[in-house]
Picture: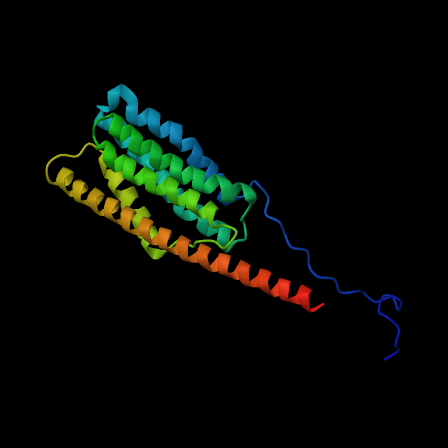
Length: 220
């Protein structure tokens, strides 16, 4: 060994590789933007001719189905290929709530879905979103398996109500919606429990840190 630094000897210095920041225009964000654009298109298709045309409601169902499919893929792509951006963090949940809220409200306006069902689902979704912000400084409440099943049940039930179904299929979709509402309530209560536990633990941790800091200052 010469004892001469590599840079002085003409050698290359090793530097840490720069972390690549995902740009705004990536496939995950494009899918999120597409889902946002599908919201007004879905409303127009569903409400066309007073919502009585079965063909237009099939078109509306197709728009809703595409929105639900992109909801599955954009988050997966963002996590898998490190495409998470600030825009995606904000726009993705907005797009999710917008397409589901638009569908529920339109179906209730058309008289196909009771308003209390729409109220329960929207109250839960908006409430959980606000609650996440309430405890965000103490931690992030992860999406549970029950929450994912709830989303699937809601999407399936709402999609069936968008279509003009009669007979046994109409009865079956009522049961699917009943399951979706039950999962909505149960998973919502579980999220509330998690939030309360997380906030209590966070406050206890803050009190312990303050007490330790007070003890250190007193010992000086």
